[in-house]
Length: 124
Image (cartoon, rainbow, N blue to C red; front, side, top):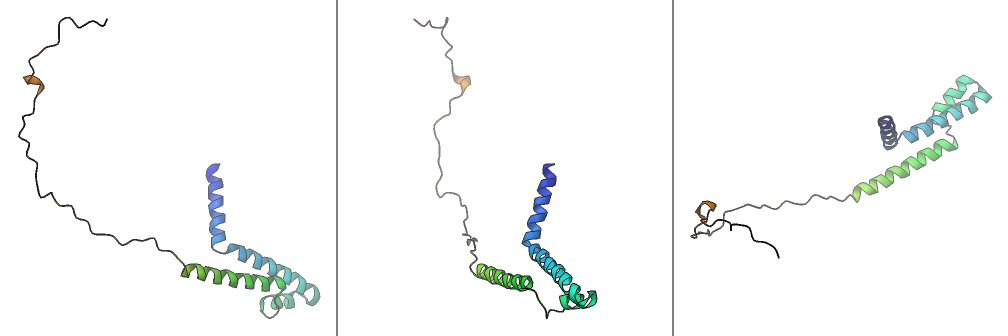
């Protein structure tokens, strides 16, 4: 169930990012124009007036104006884009110029001769 909701939300987001909302508004405007022009002059004349581009309705004009405003706004954002890539610095690891020389003997457990006390000490 959750995956279906997630897929649906992803599809809606992609639809929105690709400008699908403008397509839905434009289709709505065309249907309204088709109905309006077909009522007064017939279906054939209504279709030709709807799609000839010479008789736009107020919704078509508003859609065109807002699309242009959105394009201008996105071009301003593209010019002000911030690049977060930093030039890399060349680092190389080299062995140290000096070395440590340990001369002390390392004591091992096998060289230990003392044994624990018999019996263990009592706590008073």
